[in-house]
Image (cartoon, rainbow, N blue to C red):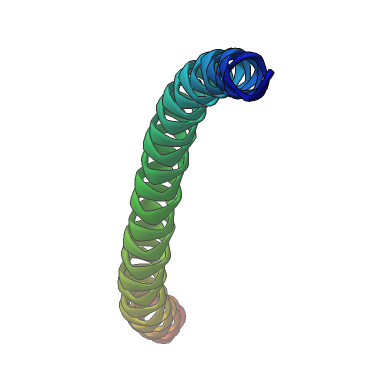
Amino acid sequence: MTLNTVQSKLQQLEEENGISRRRVRELEMELDICKRDVARERTRVMEREEIIVQQQRDVKRNIKGKSKASMRDVSINVSGDRDRDLVRERYKEAVEEKKGLS
């Protein structure tokens, strides 16, 4: 009777071991799937970060370009204002000379 009990217990333990091994394989497969998902998400996040960084660089370049362009516009406007003033002065002088000749 003791031998039967031991054999029964051994069979029960072997069944539990088989179930446990099957569950370990299932969990390992699930873990592999999770690792692939994490790698895919990590790649996606890194690509997004690269895009954001590039967009920030582009914005900075545009701001710098616009400020340089606006500074050029200001200097052009200032020199344009000076030119206009000089033309007006010369015109007034020419008109005065013409009036003086008449």
